Length: 88
Image (cartoon, rainbow, N blue to C red; front, top):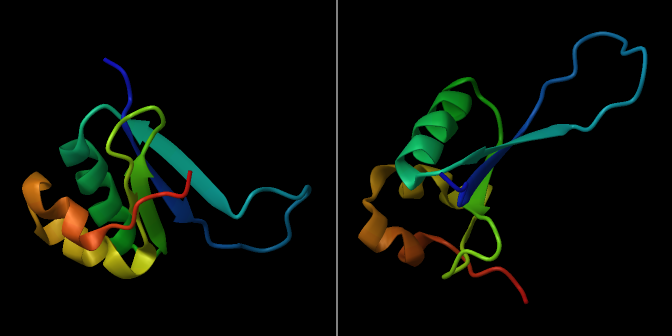
């Protein structure tokens, strides 16, 4: 199945790192429900979470960190009310 959703979360810095690494990690998901479940788990860990659809999925959606809790509480039909379309 093709991935259509992604969740990006900021990782915590722990101690000294031997090399520089990205402060964010992204995982892709085939279904919005799977993405929501993963995002909820990362949010409960206290991490900053973003989500959205992967191109060329349409309609494109970007769920900002401020809107993630609303997105997690809503069903798919109301997701667009809490997301901002990505710029083209």
